Image 1 (cartoon, rainbow over the protein chains, first blue to last red):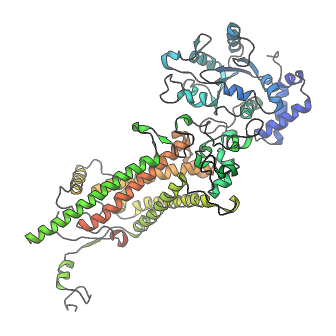
Image 2 (image 1 turned 90 degrees about the vertical axis):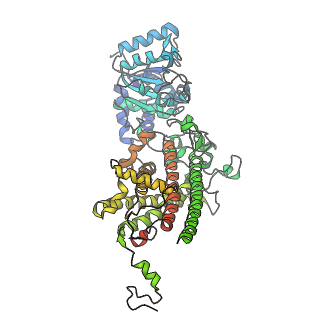
Image 3 (image 1 turned 135 degrees about the vertical axis):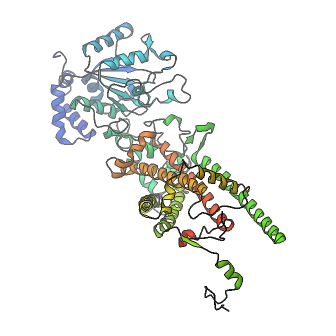
Length: 361
Length: 246
């Protein structure tokens, strides 16, 4: 496949200087936590390796992953990342439409069989034979399975592909299903988030291109370098958490002082993501920095845990909807009441027996 | 005035006292490690419940000083983790003693599920608590109903709290830590650790319910049953109030 340009060639063709290219390589190396010694390795890989073909399919989703992706913060991300991968098919970004687009997909799958990365945004609904999501005149689930068959690896973009997200919220009428339950024979790397951070998306792709393998994954299949720690572990408001200084109401003085949002239901302590280190929109801010708690959008089932603003999440089993304290207090109340009644009856019985013994004795 | 032939040398002992004492028997049931474990465990559970509740529903914000000089919530969490570690080490020690202590030390860890007489006696105990049976049976160790409750509340309950608690602690200790290596897998059962927090929180109430029942029943049986209960966990001796057969 010598006709495929290398990343470096594409960059140069697009008028990017060698200086900017090296800058990109070192930024990428530090973003991936690799250290300066890996900069030449990344540069070398980009200079010599042909671009990896990527097929990007969209199922049941809102396109926020694509929107995030095209906002990659580094100036090169927009120009280069989209060129450095050979993005052979993407609804959102490709110029072609209709039959031409579908033909491009078929051709890419044929030419690069076994070599392309399948990037999946959204998920397939399985109910009614997949009729709730029709792409190119066919159920998305069919297209997904076809595309996955020839893929080298699969990227699950966002909470939709990774976990199901809001379209899988109870009662999930379309039976929206995360892709790892449909594609079972390929390595899947999950990049959850609603959407994932742009630099995380480009960083993962760069890693896969540079080293020709998946990055180290955690137990859930997320890249450990970005999802290895909780928002909470690196949150700049953490000192207020340890001090016990919390925002008590949205408009109180503590909110203005920037105290910890734990009591306002911030899910930072249970959410694995890089928001508190990388930030959003060129590192300008992230939800907690702008005064709103984390909603835990990169965690499984975040959409079905009761209110975003409750510290204790709801339990929905057995037809009740209450938090652990409400359930526990009710149970303890019943038991405590039963104990009190039982104690009263015991005392009465004992008194009765004593009187009887006296009479009989 | 002490009687000359009295086996008890207390000077205020009366003939009617001695009439009772001659019938008393006592058996050494709970060896020192079991008793020490019981009270350390009780203290740890009390600290864990109180601090655990405040971790889920923190106290009102305090303004003692700048955040750097103040560690209120940090200390609450520290107390929780420290008590949790003590509970864990104590529980492991208790398991060790189940192997090396007397046979009463093993009763906590199993239910004689296939023994028909066990279930018959459980039923008898239930009848006693429902005020149907006139008199309870005498037991050296736990009565069958108590054994069943201990198994579900303490053996299973505390194990559950240790495993889920360690898994939650592993989140702070982070990947690669000992707790994460040993207990991190628990997160693959619930995925979103918010769910694990909720389960751990429900577990607290399970233990609270146990505390209510346990303390009530221990005191009630100390008064109403035919044997000592509360003092047995202090001295280790089970005394009986009568020597009639069951």
